[in-house]
Image (cartoon, rainbow, N blue to C red):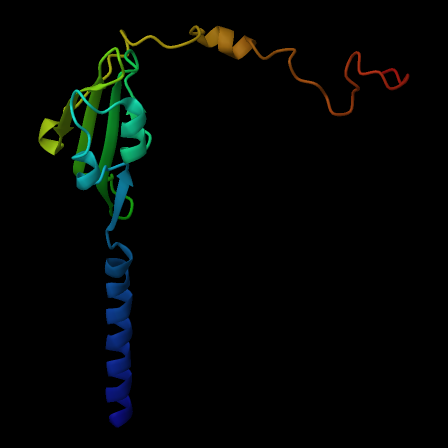
Length: 164
Protein backbone atom coordinates (compact mmCIF):
# COMPACT_ATOMS: atom_id res chain seq x y z
CA UNK A 1 0.00 0.00 0.00
CA UNK A 2 2.80 2.43 0.88
CA UNK A 3 4.59 1.39 -2.34
CA UNK A 4 1.57 2.41 -4.47
CA UNK A 5 1.38 5.79 -2.72
CA UNK A 6 5.08 6.55 -3.44
CA UNK A 7 4.74 5.48 -7.10
CA UNK A 8 1.63 7.60 -7.48
CA UNK A 9 3.41 10.64 -6.03
CA UNK A 10 6.45 10.12 -8.26
CA UNK A 11 4.23 9.73 -11.29
CA UNK A 12 2.37 12.95 -10.47
CA UNK A 13 5.63 14.85 -9.88
CA UNK A 14 7.08 13.58 -13.17
CA UNK A 15 3.91 14.57 -15.04
CA UNK A 16 4.03 18.03 -13.46
CA UNK A 17 7.68 18.50 -14.51
CA UNK A 18 6.94 17.32 -18.07
CA UNK A 19 3.94 19.65 -18.39
CA UNK A 20 5.71 22.67 -16.83
CA UNK A 21 8.93 22.39 -18.87
CA UNK A 22 7.51 24.02 -22.02
CA UNK A 23 6.30 26.96 -19.94
CA UNK A 24 9.81 27.64 -18.64
CA UNK A 25 11.37 27.06 -22.06
CA UNK A 26 9.21 29.81 -23.59
CA UNK A 27 10.25 32.61 -21.28
CA UNK A 28 10.54 35.90 -23.17
CA UNK A 29 13.96 37.31 -24.00
CA UNK A 30 14.19 41.10 -23.80
CA UNK A 31 17.01 42.77 -25.76
CA UNK A 32 18.18 46.37 -25.91
CA UNK A 33 19.50 47.09 -29.40
CA UNK A 34 21.01 50.07 -31.13
CA UNK A 35 22.73 53.24 -30.02
CA UNK A 36 20.77 55.13 -27.36
CA UNK A 37 22.59 58.36 -26.47
CA UNK A 38 22.92 58.97 -22.75
CA UNK A 39 20.73 61.88 -21.59
CA UNK A 40 23.59 63.82 -19.99
CA UNK A 41 25.69 63.61 -23.17
CA UNK A 42 22.74 64.45 -25.41
CA UNK A 43 22.06 67.57 -23.32
CA UNK A 44 25.58 68.81 -24.21
CA UNK A 45 24.62 68.95 -27.90
CA UNK A 46 23.56 72.56 -28.44
CA UNK A 47 21.75 73.91 -31.50
CA UNK A 48 23.85 76.49 -33.32
CA UNK A 49 27.03 75.71 -31.34
CA UNK A 50 27.99 72.01 -31.54
CA UNK A 51 29.69 70.66 -34.67
CA UNK A 52 29.75 67.16 -36.19
CA UNK A 53 33.10 66.23 -34.66
CA UNK A 54 31.88 67.13 -31.16
CA UNK A 55 28.62 65.22 -31.67
CA UNK A 56 30.65 62.16 -32.69
CA UNK A 57 32.84 62.55 -29.58
CA UNK A 58 29.82 62.85 -27.30
CA UNK A 59 27.41 60.33 -28.82
CA UNK A 60 29.58 58.12 -31.03
CA UNK A 61 28.87 57.29 -34.65
CA UNK A 62 25.24 57.54 -35.72
CA UNK A 63 23.17 54.40 -36.25
CA UNK A 64 22.26 55.71 -39.67
CA UNK A 65 22.85 58.66 -41.98
CA UNK A 66 20.00 59.83 -44.23
CA UNK A 67 20.28 58.30 -47.70
CA UNK A 68 19.93 61.55 -49.62
CA UNK A 69 21.27 64.04 -47.06
CA UNK A 70 24.54 63.35 -45.21
CA UNK A 71 23.69 66.21 -42.83
CA UNK A 72 20.90 64.23 -41.14
CA UNK A 73 22.06 61.69 -38.54
CA UNK A 74 19.91 59.16 -36.68
CA UNK A 75 20.68 57.47 -33.36
CA UNK A 76 18.24 54.56 -33.11
CA UNK A 77 17.59 52.23 -30.18
CA UNK A 78 14.89 49.66 -29.55
CA UNK A 79 13.84 47.32 -26.77
CA UNK A 80 12.48 44.07 -28.22
CA UNK A 81 10.97 40.90 -26.82
CA UNK A 82 11.27 37.41 -28.33
CA UNK A 83 9.05 34.56 -27.18
CA UNK A 84 9.96 31.16 -28.65
CA UNK A 85 8.99 31.02 -32.32
CA UNK A 86 6.62 34.00 -32.24
CA UNK A 87 7.26 37.25 -34.10
CA UNK A 88 9.61 39.69 -32.34
CA UNK A 89 7.68 42.45 -30.61
CA UNK A 90 9.07 45.97 -30.23
CA UNK A 91 8.38 47.18 -26.68
CA UNK A 92 10.00 50.61 -26.99
CA UNK A 93 11.84 52.51 -29.71
CA UNK A 94 13.68 55.83 -29.54
CA UNK A 95 15.20 57.85 -32.36
CA UNK A 96 17.31 60.97 -31.99
CA UNK A 97 17.47 62.90 -35.26
CA UNK A 98 20.25 65.47 -35.50
CA UNK A 99 20.31 67.81 -38.47
CA UNK A 100 23.40 69.83 -39.38
CA UNK A 101 23.60 72.99 -41.48
CA UNK A 102 25.98 73.53 -44.42
CA UNK A 103 28.76 74.52 -41.94
CA UNK A 104 28.42 71.17 -40.10
CA UNK A 105 26.90 72.83 -37.01
CA UNK A 106 23.83 71.35 -35.30
CA UNK A 107 20.67 72.90 -36.74
CA UNK A 108 18.12 70.81 -34.81
CA UNK A 109 17.81 67.90 -32.38
CA UNK A 110 14.57 65.93 -32.49
CA UNK A 111 13.58 63.05 -30.20
CA UNK A 112 11.07 60.52 -31.54
CA UNK A 113 9.45 57.60 -29.73
CA UNK A 114 7.04 54.73 -30.34
CA UNK A 115 4.16 57.19 -30.68
CA UNK A 116 5.87 58.67 -33.75
CA UNK A 117 6.47 55.32 -35.48
CA UNK A 118 4.80 54.76 -38.83
CA UNK A 119 4.26 51.53 -40.72
CA UNK A 120 5.79 51.57 -44.18
CA UNK A 121 4.64 49.18 -46.88
CA UNK A 122 6.89 49.21 -49.95
CA UNK A 123 5.10 49.14 -53.29
CA UNK A 124 6.73 46.31 -55.30
CA UNK A 125 5.56 47.92 -58.55
CA UNK A 126 7.20 51.27 -57.76
CA UNK A 127 10.30 50.30 -55.80
CA UNK A 128 13.19 49.90 -58.24
CA UNK A 129 15.58 47.02 -57.82
CA UNK A 130 19.02 46.56 -59.26
CA UNK A 131 19.50 44.31 -62.28
CA UNK A 132 16.87 43.03 -64.61
CA UNK A 133 14.13 40.51 -64.19
CA UNK A 134 14.32 37.23 -66.10
CA UNK A 135 11.35 35.32 -67.42
CA UNK A 136 10.98 31.76 -66.20
CA UNK A 137 12.27 30.40 -69.50
CA UNK A 138 15.40 32.59 -69.29
CA UNK A 139 16.02 31.36 -65.76
CA UNK A 140 15.48 27.74 -66.79
CA UNK A 141 17.69 27.88 -69.90
CA UNK A 142 20.23 30.32 -68.49
CA UNK A 143 22.38 27.69 -66.79
CA UNK A 144 22.81 25.28 -69.70
CA UNK A 145 26.46 25.02 -70.63
CA UNK A 146 27.70 26.58 -67.40
CA UNK A 147 28.50 23.35 -65.59
CA UNK A 148 31.94 21.74 -65.68
CA UNK A 149 32.38 18.05 -65.05
CA UNK A 150 34.74 17.13 -62.24
CA UNK A 151 36.20 14.35 -64.37
CA UNK A 152 36.85 16.57 -67.37
CA UNK A 153 39.69 19.10 -67.37
CA UNK A 154 38.66 22.71 -67.93
CA UNK A 155 39.53 24.41 -71.17
CA UNK A 156 42.70 26.50 -71.16
CA UNK A 157 43.67 25.05 -67.81
CA UNK A 158 47.24 24.34 -68.93
CA UNK A 159 48.96 21.58 -67.10
CA UNK A 160 49.59 19.12 -69.86
CA UNK A 161 47.89 16.98 -72.41
CA UNK A 162 45.18 14.61 -71.51
CA UNK A 163 42.43 14.72 -74.02
CA UNK A 164 38.93 13.69 -73.31
